[in-house]
Each structure stands twice: as C-alpha cells, then as structure tokens.
Image (cartoon, rainbow, N blue to C red):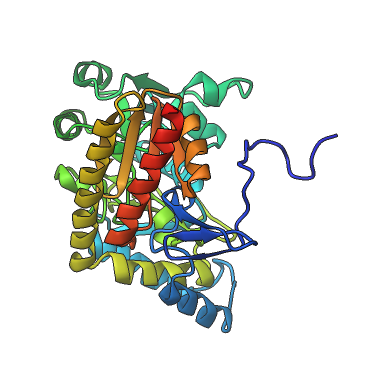
Length: 390
C-alpha cells in the first residue's frame, strides 16, 4: 500500500523536533551537528532569534494579501537586493525551482520583445541542477532527471562542465542565453573556473546572448561573497536566488537588469504566495545580517579554517577521501567510497552531511557555525571515516 506521503524521497531514519544554531535535536534529546543546514537553507542556523523575532512580529500583523495590492515588505526586500547586487529589479518567488522557471521565461520574453522570437536556445552545462519542474529538468538534461517525463521543453543545449572549447563552439549569434551555476551543488561541489566565467562575458559581448546565473545554493554568503560570481568579477543579466535568502522560510527571487527584464510587463508573470509579507520580513532580516562585510569576512575565515581541517582529514584517511572541493562554507569531500556510506557513518557519529553527484559528500553548515563546532564536526567525520576503514 502506498504511503500517505508520496514515496519520492529516500529518507534517513531520523526526525528532528527542534534545532539550536548548528544543532538538530531529536525528540529524545539526541543532538546532531548539522553540516547540511537543510541543504544550504538554514543560513543563520536553526531557530535564529533574529529571524524568529522578524517572523513572529510579522505574523502578528498580516500574513498574506496577494500581489493584487502593494506589499511593503516585498518592496523593502527587493530594494535591499538591488542595492547589494548588479540587479535593477527583482521578482520574489517561493522557491529556486520557481525562480528557474521565471529565468527561462524572462530569457525568451527578452528576445521576443527584441523582435527575435525564434531565438530560444539556452546553453547549459552537464551535471547542472536547476530544480525539478519540467523546464528545469529540460535545462539540466540528465537522464536521471528527465527519464519518464518527456516530451521535454525544447531549446536547451548542454555542454560538458567547464569545457571552454565546447562552450565557445556552442554559443552563436542564435544563442538566447548561457545558464550556469558558478559553483555546482548537486553536481558535486564543482566550481566553474574564472576563465570560463570570463569567457561567458566575452561571448555575451560578441553575440548579445544573456548570462543567467543559478545561485540558489551558492548565493547569500555561502562562499564568502554575497554571491559566488563576485569572485570572478563577471556579472549576470539574470540571477536565480533561493535557499539561504529565507534562512529556512520558503523564499526565492529572480534578479535582473532593466535590459534583461524589458519584456516582462503587467500580466507576463505572477505568483499567489510569492513575495508575501511573512517571507519577505524574514528575507529582509537575512539580508541585514549576511550582506554585512564583517559577516562575510567571517564566513571566509571560517571556510578557510574548515577547509584546512578537512585537508587533514583527507590526508588521514586516503582510502576513504580523495580531495576537498569548494569555497567558503560550501565544501565537498570527494570520496573513494560511496558517499552514502560516509553519510550513514556520520549518522552514527551524530553528524549530518548531504550526498551529491561525482562521488561527493557536501558540507553546507550554517554560516554562523563556530570555530569549536567546526573542530567538533571534523572530529566526528574523522571517527566516521575510521568506522568505514574498520
């Protein structure tokens, strides 16, 4: 008999009743050091008091009005994002998948508005993950994502990851956009090289194509910059944001330049819940905290500390681990064993990690994790690796 919850998840035998900072706690009081943070969602940790206050204060006022009316909290969040980024305008969504759908629509609407409605092809990269809607899986193109869901939305062309030659060949005067994660999450914590990112800028200058960055997982301070693309100095025309922007509350956004958004007029897109007062009140507080230079400097410092300790872990367990990947507090352990084995061994040591493609285990702790918690996390991973060796 099918479960009341549609069985599309392979869930761990764990349930958490509450959380405190970097710790997730079961009903019997067992504490797990959370290096997954809801897959890079709980950017400021569990039950962050500033976010709790922002949410409860707003909940006591008004939850939802719909976008038929002005929403001051949405306006405030959009203004914060515009002030901190390349963008001129923002559409607020509930999730990263919705942001991906709008980004695709915005690209096509841009070219239709420019008088080239047949210019629809978007170049994407192997190993990508842009969500699970029909448009997003067509963009990713992998058999794992698309099998059984055809016919797929046309107009996507995948090239090998970080292959500058293939990218240069694929982008022509008929290309509508290049869409990429500057640092792949689900794909295995794989950073796109600065050289390839800069090549994208050159191809945009030559062909007029748009650049779309998916920063759903890598954004909002995760790499030590507010957004990962800032490290390479290449700005997009459109960017998808979610996960960390809500600190655990469902929230996403599409950021765009005035030029890229030119075709998006009244009635061209909408959302029932997107940009509601509750979500945007939390998002504003997240931005107040994370967009601070001192906070980002601390993420950088802690990311360096964690990476240093992980390098020692890899050296101490060469039969289990191969290398450390990533930037800031978006890190991955390339494994010589099945990532699921590392994740499961971690459960026994009360540490939570997240599997990914390319034989990688992701480490995505809250950005507020302390130095002592980083040391404890690596100690627990060390014991988990010893379990596997035994």
